[in-house]
Image 1 (cartoon, rainbow, N blue to C red):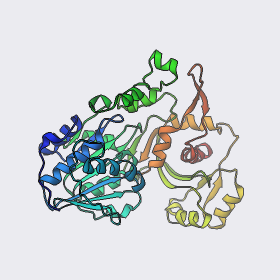
Image 2 (image 1 turned 180 degrees about the vertical axis):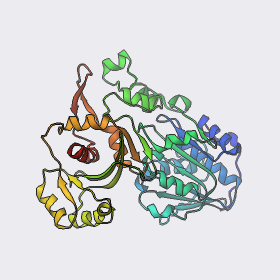
Image 3 (image 1 turned 120 degrees about the vertical axis):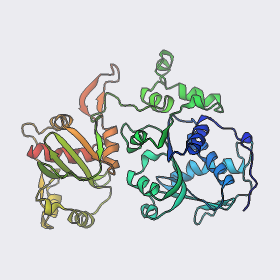
Image 4 (image 1 turned 180 degrees about the horizontal axis):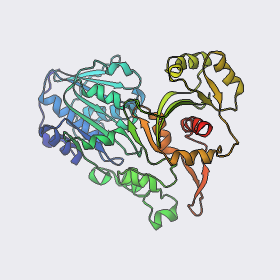
Length: 401
């Protein structure tokens, strides 16, 4: 479908659109748009892509998110509204047809593909694009981004709410060929007043505190577009690593049982005071044959070490042992063996999490101590949530170290 080029002045754009255009025109490799909610990051990215399609032919564009279901609910909805004019003054492509079998459409001889990165992870291997856009990029893997970038000819865009204190996305700011532009709801003059009031209700002012709407975390992330690390977070300080350590004092595996909630198995390298952790298994409703197959496919036997398991399920440990795996139970109720003692041990180490171990990273960002509701005092009591992987990490340390 050949579409006549439109003039820029019919676009109601914000500073996010301007920054994308400036980055591209300035020869940058890509742009990252971290920021608060409703700051027009996603809409601006789509607007720029549509303009790009009007000015080029024969280009391949990928618009992605972690899953297709999330993409349909958010990005694709905005894309349709921009193209068909629902809720916007100008309908850019009222006759646009999106093929729902392949989730592709054509604009001015350019192909736009929509897909979920985690739904079909192998799709990015070998996928050549001229432009790609990853929405909520924090929710995907760095390796996925790397695969897309190394086959991207022209330009890329990533956006995100800074909802995770640590992410590979923030590391892109160090690159001289990448623009980082942070925005908030204040950068979007087209927001309805009711939305502005809702966002500003999170700010911990006396009035909002009295009304019960104040939330410092939501205000920091969604209002100010900044990273929030609350004092209640158990493991706030960590960084990522790429390649498995070559030098180490010990290697361990830890396993925390689960069925409805995730079963977590992690690999640990200990080098002095440095702790490196990597996800081996993190899944719900996993049966023993599948678990055993995965564990045997790792280098456990070559590492000549143990899988230290939660000792509350001796039959499960025996099943692994019967399969020839070096499983043993964690030593609990010994000196230095309490949950809090294990947490303190880990807190005193330099923590490194593998860049692709997003479940461990997510738990680290959300594993908290209880907070007294009246005094806001942080208590030495871990909340029993977001701890499956970190329990598995703790078991070998309190057993052998």
